[in-house]
Image 1 (cartoon, one colour):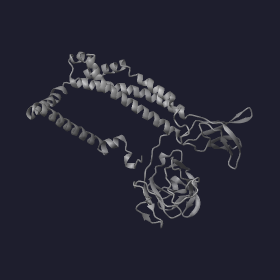
Image 2 (image 1 turned 90 degrees about the vertical axis):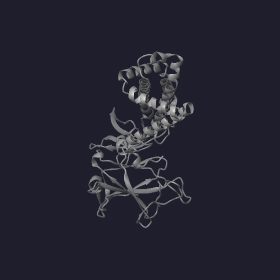
Image 3 (image 1 turned 30 degrees about the vertical axis):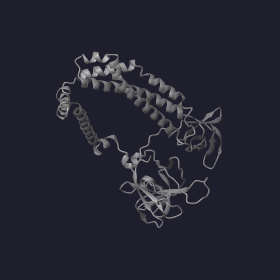
Image 4 (image 1 turned 90 degrees about the horizontal axis):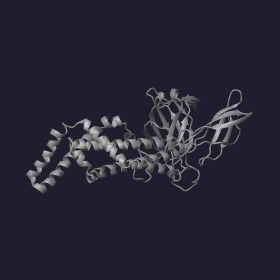
Length: 417
């Protein structure tokens, strides 16, 4: 599934500015008219057009003129509490036992070698929770009233001074409360399940002095391993480091002196359960001659949402983003790539398709160095730019600062590949 920028609205934007509230009211009115017509048709076949119309309108009049104005919140609350207690007595909490059993054995069937194990676990618990709660609501709403009629419990309720509207609303709120309680419990269990499933650590396999600090590798744990680089402090001692990014996460490494020997400790995985707030921009395509084009190359796919640029030519894609420095407090500028490669000739299919990406000021005054990458077709790749990096200013090699040199006065920067 591809999600475009205009689909990512906040709830308030969708409700007000995208007329979600108006559309909902329109649908409710449309369903009401449709229900009236269906009831009128049924009454017409039973009693004739005149009597059928009279019976349907009388029911609507009783609802609007007498039932709703006389509805009591106190009676609705009492009926909601009764519905909640009846649902508990019917052992709906057995659903929690089913959910717990599913969580106990789910780890056996989830792919621990996934490129993003955090996303896999979260998708599993979200899907499982949704289906179980939906089934709960379905069975409660469908079988509760027939069961009350069979057990003659409904007679106890209807003989009391309560209205039909209060009975319906009481059932809705009562069953909603049951679903909310179960959903909260499932959410807590799911949180611990996901954290336990993705949490792991490593121990070092080997490390030796390199050109930049101390480099090494970890042993294989959770079906993967990392390479890491340790930094030396001012006194020459090894202090801290970080691993490379594997399966969408990394680890911090801390060095400790134990009995005169340096021990390395690896922290918890970072990035697996990190929420992302996307920043969208506009894209422009330049053709083989370097001129602005309307779209990229069409390789025969029906969907025009995703187009391609040609390698070994002046063809390129340029994104323009609005950047606010306050959104990057750590000074890092992460860029995520979700790319596909289309090969037009046979070649080395083992070696990935290579590309380059640069950050530049829209006015052309400064740009970063070219950062090479390899297209990862089935996962989201991430390139993290440091706030300061080698580049060029006015065509001369120089160190550039993203937030000082590569963003123009309008707060825009360009990303080109």
